[in-house]
Length: 119
Image 1 (cartoon, helix red, strand yellow):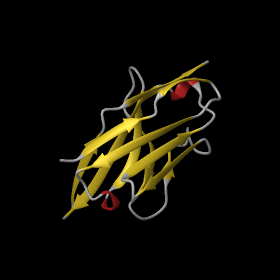
Image 2 (cartoon, rainbow, N blue to C red):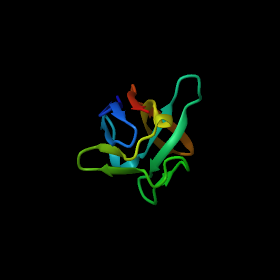
Image 3 (cartoon, rainbow, N blue to C red):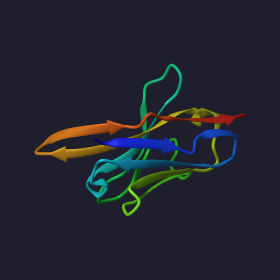
């Protein structure tokens, strides 16, 4: 079965950096669009960045220029490099894998990793 395991979260001071990793298993990684989402307390889960199986990356306006999503298909891993972190980036970050087969989307989620940027 598909399994996504995030790592790399933690506590940093405002302006600091973190690199999140999401290791995938049980899937043909290169066929999936991969994304990072986040959810802050009391807020809805929001899309942070997407890297399709082919095509250009996309970012939420709030993180553009500070975050970079990348993938290594040989390692079945997607990354999120987060620079110049701000307190408003504090959230649980989730890895998402999505594939469309015969017009039907399947989504898979990791368990999440906490990122806290202190003021």
